Image (cartoon, rainbow, N blue to C red):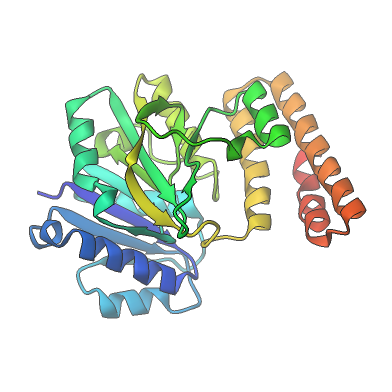
Length: 288
């Protein structure tokens, strides 16, 4: 019986994806020999030969190859359709596991406490710095803090804690829960699909646990650029408010995002930072 189906979505990250898959297999050889773990790779129309290389090097991996880039949320949903595991583990292609990822312990934790529906572990940089991979739902006050105070970069929890949401870059959930919620909302191309999934799970009474004792190495923005990320986050915030909040709050959020973009553009002009100016100029259209 397969315990975990590990789903990895990739787009033009061939070397990172190879390293990710190799790290999983080398960290958990017994589990793969006993067929308790399986890996499903969804290639989003990469042009760097990712799918062919993975097929050639790792014969037992199920590789799904898309003709177009359907985005992270849709690729993950695609990957689990034929998954055999009782649990789904979503991993970014720019992560690497070790024994300290403690995947079996994550399963045990979820089995012991049936109120837990989702668990996220710690994402650690190559330099050993723990990245913040959890947060509070983007209610209005939280959104103000994230946009204007940089709270997202604050101190990271060092003890096991219940949180609102955890990153889809290292997220374990029950197959039954994922199916009951119809997976990630595919309106999110990339970013915030994890927060919104946890939000829907919490509405059904499922708890979300952050477990810092489960660690993976993560190359931040290894699978996307920062400017692309900002654009997708802008779109994701607006969609979340359209879906889950009332119209008045949506108007307020649009105003906040517009103000953030204008302030950032102004800083870009004053400091001569063309990258900052152009990045936020490009996202203005989402808030208008």
